[in-house]
Every structure is written in structure tokens, then in C-alpha cells.
Image (cartoon, rainbow, N blue to C red; front, side):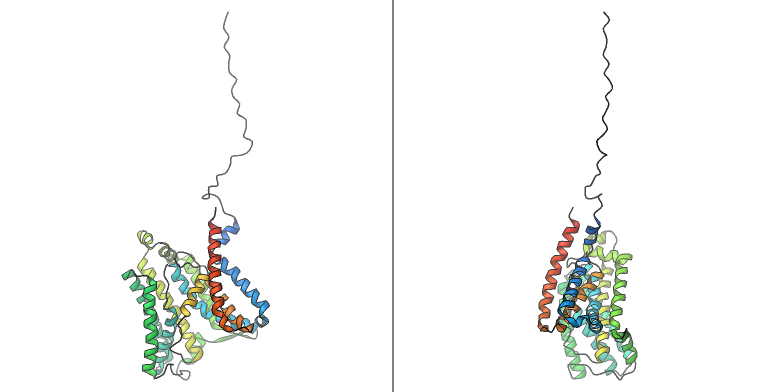
Length: 360
């Protein structure tokens, strides 16, 4: 009997019920559009600014007038012009407590150089620019040379400038305020540059509003489209890692402090040519306003995160609240309370936004 061998039929694999699953481990998956929008540092403050604007539109009817809005924008611009360089410095991992009194130092310098030396006011303007940039460079140089926290260095500069502003003004002018320079050569030309008013639709708009928006556009381009912007984020995130990959940390830090000096000079010139004279005891406390506007705008005190657009909305919220309280007929003493609430609220919102944006 011839044995028969059995042949096994070839196995036929059943086709899968569905196509292969796509790997989504958080690194290769694309996040939804709304999460990518939330990851932007200015989104939270934009929503807050809209809420504050709508609130005062309802609570303070004068806000609806074009003239009132021009005043609000002007108030916002005087804060925003300084909040922009302060924000860039914070993204770079540092902050400047001397920013408020540095504005006054610039104005005092220009005024006293022009009046006491009987020179064209543009000479005072140029000297003030040199002094302001030198203060910023000194802060940055001392920071990188000593390794001390910017809090301590700029606190020292704040106290020095506060004392010098008052003492030198009294010594030179015999008063706590500078002399009126409105009748000096070059005054009208300088005023047209730093403190003029344009009429749009029958409403006077201060030139600082236009400067504020232009500087915000320049700062945004600087952060997002240049090597210096990359360096700023890098040194703010981790300066040691940044130095290891070739980022010029010393140059970047000093340049950021000098940027604050430039902002102080510009705002100081606006104050001088708006009021013709300067009180030497002013400016104290303004540095906290600038820092708070940057923080509300999404910048972190720890550095490495933020934008130039966020502080624009942050400054607008400040101007809106400051003038909105007046237009609503409330006690203006409540402004600082509103400021504290806005600061804490914005910090919590920014924290929630970042957590939601990075959650898988």
C-alpha cells in the first residue's frame, strides 16, 4: 500500500479590517489649530484687552467718543513705548528696575544741558541719548561681568539715579524742577518730532501712538525674523547652552539693556517737549507699570518666552483702565487695585493657556 502524503493548504491571511493606525505619540501628531493659537503668548492678553474694552464701553459712556479713545490710546502709548524694550529684556531673561527713573534722567539731562549751557535743544537731546544708552550699557556690562542678578544691579541703579536726579537738579537749577525751555532754539522742531499732535477725522491724536505701533512692528520683526531675535530667546532660555552653541551672550545682554535705555530716552524726550519742564522727583514706580504690562502681555519673569505684540495689548489694558475709571466717574485711587487684579488675573490666564497648549 502506497502511503499518501497530505499537503497542507497554503495559509491565506485575512485582510485587515481597517488600514494601519497612524502613530500619534505627541511628537509626530499635528495639534489642532486652536491649541496652536493658544500657544501664542499674546492670545490671553488679547482676550483680556477685549473684555476690559467692552466692560468700559458699557460702564463708561464717554469711552464711546472718538476724543476719549484718542486719550486712552495716548495714555497707552506712553506706557507701551517703554513696555516694548522691557519685554524684549525679559524675554532675554533679565529685567530693569531703573527703567522708570531712567526716563526722568533722560529728560532732566536734555533740559539742563540745553538751558544751563544756553545751547540748541537738539544738543541736549543728543547728550541725553548718549547718557541713556550709557546707563543701559553699564547695567548690561555689570551684569555679565559680575554674574549678579539683574534685580540687584538695576535696583542699585534705580537708587543712584533717583538720588542723582533730585540732587543734581537742585544743585544746578536751585529748584526741584528744570527751567522752561519752550523759547529756546530748536524747541519747536524737537516738539514736532517727539510731542506733536495729528488731526484724524477731527480728532487730535498724539504722535506717540504712531511711534508705539511702529516700534511694536519693528520689535516683532526683530524677534521673529533676525538672528538677534533667536539670540534673545536663546539667552533667556538658558544662557549657558546658548553660549555653548555660539550665541554672543555678552553682546545680546548688553544690547537688550541699551534697548531699554533707548526707550527711556525716547519717552523722556516726549515728556520734556510736552510740558517744557520736568519735575525731578517723578518716575518712581513707573518701572513696575512697564514690567507689569510686559508680564500681562505674556512675557515670563524667567525668560525665554514672550512676544512684542503681547505688551501692546498689555499697555492698552493699562491705558483703558486708567482713563476708563476717570470716564466712569469712579475714584481714581482704585487704579492700583485694578492693576493688581489685572496682573494676577493675566498671570493665571497665561499659566492656564500655556498648560492647555502644551497638554497632549
